Length: 348
Image (cartoon, rainbow, N blue to C red; front, side):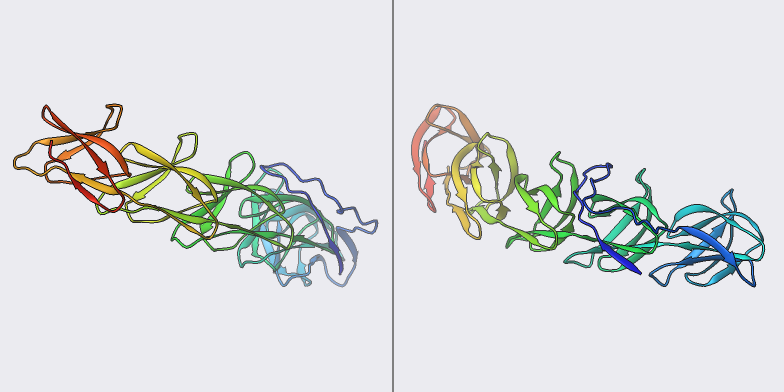
């Protein structure tokens, strides 16, 4: 069986790729008949699969292992292998032989690839590294929703090499792979490899993004760092990009992963600029303020401009980034300085 390695350009969405070396074979034969002591149909393929014979209106009339003859009455049929189909004619005293082609996707994981028709209807699937037989024609092949278009010729094996992408990290979180238009294709836990066809992608971790170029038979590894705000209260901190768009949040003391870059950490409506580095941990220290007292009153915390930041019951602390604040109880107010890791008892 002839073998052809095909280099193809990734086509996102439902479009076909431009094929770089998927030319037609001059001796391409799909279905031919020859004299035989029996009347029937045979499909040759590179795999130990089955083919099916259907009437022209789609009713199955028999099946057989590839390479063997399925006895049929003379007439017109449709032959199907792995849901790919074409019309055939069977004549008395002759065996019609159709030659399938084979598709293989190579990669670095044990994921599956899928073969679709040109309208996007799934026909069959196979584990990466395995062969899948189809009748000659044009198809789409997907791996983790990344797509390539190809043309299969009878007797040929088309090999499509995928590449792998991953994001290294130390938290129990996920990263997401998108096309360049922002459509999500697949996702995996940090550190897990994902196969995709060669091309340009966007990788997202906690809504922070970076571009990734994936090459055939190669691994593209992005590295994340961790970010956390430390504190002793049961509150949440928020992570924003430098434009102020919220990306994620977590409870004080819990680390989350982000791609390298500059971010803003916000706690009780006060934020500070931080940098996240690959394979490193960025920790933002906080302090607490509390107003002791009896009763069910609330105290209020303001920044230096008088803007109210948050409030809490008497005796319940609030976590704050280091800095100067005003604490108000009723009509009384006092100024406090909050230091990292310290608790300030305010007495308005």
